Length: 219
Length: 170
Ligand SMILES: Cc1cc2nc3c(=O)[nH]c(=O)nc-3n(C[C@H](O)[C@H](O)[C@H](O)COP(=O)(O)O)c2cc1C
Image (tube, rainbow over the protein chains, first blue to last red):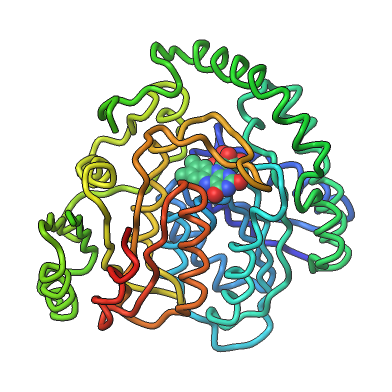
């Protein structure tokens, strides 16, 4: 089966977490003789080809980062330009990944994604959810690779089923919420986490406090 | 009450004009931003506003005055077009670009992770939409958006019900 993967990430491919996740997923998907093509909406020169691929193919996967509880603006702009299909048979699935660790953070967006395929004359084939992905491109090559590795298994799963089952997704995306113990630990390590972020920022050339108020300290 | 109105519909749209008149009649002072003709790009996800130049967006276009307006006006009401039963990309870009208002730091104030806000000022945002959309869903989404930015959702209403959006202002 041939799969068209469209990345709805705004970040250019070399720095995009979505792109690295797609690469791992694709590897698993293609293992048993399936094929896939990938288009990146961060590069507007690819939009026409992505549209044509959407029109001509019946298995579509949109991979996207969660942007303020929903689809990134850039992906929404692309979707607005698609002509709804008039011939049935096309399936759209989604791979939704975000920065916060809990699956619950993605549910509002998932609810909207469930309604989208029908509006485009297609059938819904499920949404794969995963949080805690913020660091993929920040944490270095080795850690990043480890973080995205589980997506290969989901690629294999999708190749076999052509659908993301809700239960399977929930166990992949767990935890839905952090447990009380996890929350306590998180709070305990808050100061350490701050130091870690400060260090990353310094490495990136940041000269200000991360909680600076450039528009006014009184605000 | 001082109100910022961000109009993402064409200035000549009679629905927007009527809504603006209604809102003007209710606010002490209004700033109207005609965002339709302005250059407001999508967020490019570079994280500069969190990690390189905290609080400052790296995309240099017409958005910054709106961003400052969230903080200097008591409330902001968006006038938005819709697409695919949701707000359209113009409106979504405005929301995506709010990221500089949050810091990189994360805390768990209730049962979920949230970013620590950069400013103490409590945001109040409302949405008036023109076109077909699922109102319940828009409200639910705005609730979540405001949960993320530790602010108040003034509600999502069809643009013909402009007066409603200020009814629960603090
Ligand atoms: C504008 C913007 C909004 C975001 N909103 C959310 C959010 O609501 N929830 C969340 O868990 N992560 C959010 N994130 C984090 C991204 O989803 C996460 O870092 C993702 O891995 C980025 O993928 P990319 O590198 O392909 O853009 C947001 C990031 C940006 C830049």
